[in-house]
Length: 140
Ligand code: GDP
Image: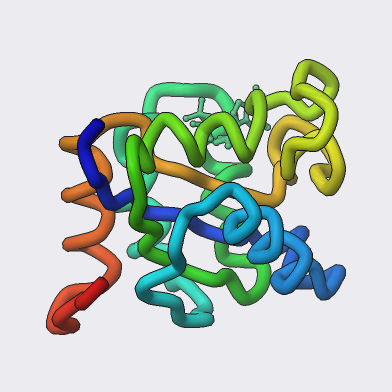
């Protein structure tokens, strides 16, 4: 199995409820390593760029508003099959459909305020890490 890196975010609904440590505990318990982490407040422009693929979807403007409503924690996670593994640790987009024990089942408020983001492909992981950690050398 391949050692991969994935891009992760702890969203504003979770930072507002002091859940950074609880979410990081689930990440680390899964065996994934948090090899980069910073807490930031996104500008509207950056959020629009990050979610550009969703531009045509009805929830795009609400999503941008939500993601700029408070601090978020940006991370790079590393491990075997990290991309799929972190998607499994997060659970389904809609917490009502997420499996027991997942981040979204335990912490998400609803389908939008769903506490966590994780890249969905090798290409997107590389692009999301480049966009959010430009200028930083990430060593595992
Ligand atoms: P993800 O890869 O599981 O995060 O899901 P998507 O890529 O489909 O959607 C990106 C983000 O948009 C989700 O994590 C949610 O925060 C939000 N989102 C997705 N679907 C909906 C929806 O139907 N309504 C609203 N309001 N937000 C949504």
